[in-house]
Amino acid sequence: KSLDAQQVIDVNRLIRECETHDRASANIQMDHGLNADKEMDSWCLSYRDAELVGVASVFAPSREEAEISLCVKPSARRTGLGMAMLTATTAHLRSRGVSTLLLVCDRRSESGRRMAERTCRDVQHTEYSMKLTPGFVGLPDNRLTLRETNLSDLPEICAICRSAYGAD
Image (cartoon, rainbow, N blue to C red; front, top):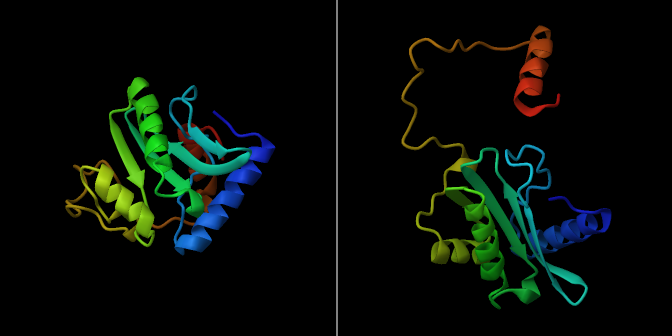
């Protein structure tokens, strides 16, 4: 459910190693405070001896959908470790009633892309490029008013954030 101080250091070290090797973002979500199911395990760590060699992180802002980010130490890749962590994480999420699973992968990560192509039903490259698929269809029946904000709106924005996320 959460990492201790040493695990945070180890995860950050692994992320840096993977990002340097892949020249891509590992997309590991460190803050799971917005996960809807507070009792859900949201970390899967894999060790070889005492060394962290793999991590899967789960971001699940709703009880129906979760994003899984995964990184494996370059020297431990192509051993089945990533697939084992993905399988374990997926099984846990399914047992918690999560119906939609998204594997998040930076398209520049060759190994991540290969894994996604082998394991995912549908590969899309849209979220991080800020494309809306199938396209913007308009606002629903005048329920929303769009306008630019300014500094005087800050108290109202903070109240919305507190209401939605429990924090400023």
